[in-house]
Image (cartoon, rainbow, N blue to C red; front, side):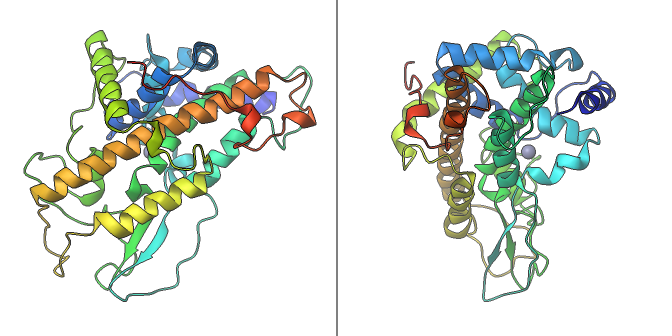
Length: 334
Ligand SMILES: [Zn+2]
């Protein structure tokens, strides 16, 4: 990032982040992902993350004592305030052709997998020219916020697909177009929102900055999810390719999410309690996976940096999955 771009970013932030209550939909889900990652990270990586985040904290009133978790909704917050040039980086619409329906769909060039790859490469200083004397503080601070959020997004299965049928020839927008009636909540009115709310487990977003009681509440949820869905659920320990994560989400969409749906899709669908219970389990498992993977991505970036003599040292240009760059986070300590 050039100095000029940093200044532009500062200007955008100053205008975009005015005080207001956090109303990010799916905010709790994102914060649980971040809390799981934060709880299992080694202290030196946690400290590094807090230090990196501090550079943009003066521009937001939504972060205070727990910025790593509080910033998990930053990407949605700025999107909601008109910072739209990253709006399409929250998802990847892999087409799910169902009920024998087929149509030509143009692939997206920029999406959530592209964004995660770009951010990790950027934070690793890959493929970037280094200008001597230029600080990366603001760039890293911005990208870390987006990374925490996007890794959450890609594990929400409906952020990885759009379903095409004769009733939805243009796609169902990741379930946004599928109307629902859910007994547990008036706010959950479509299929996408159902999954955004962790299938009704998290319908009331916490106010930001977090109160200590909400911080504790998130800690308890993190402990429970790490106990119910331990590290061993992350297959290929650790495959950190976001394309694999998107494929995994896509499989859930194809096999689970529309499993209870019936022919009359134009009518309002009322999911059964069995569907809610089964889906809640899947959603929470996805959140645990996202937390584990976020922790590992950050460990890889910063533990390899700490061993570098120079950011451009060719030895440091390791793949994300390179064994020697890994630190084992402290899983299941609580
Ligand atoms: Zn998002």
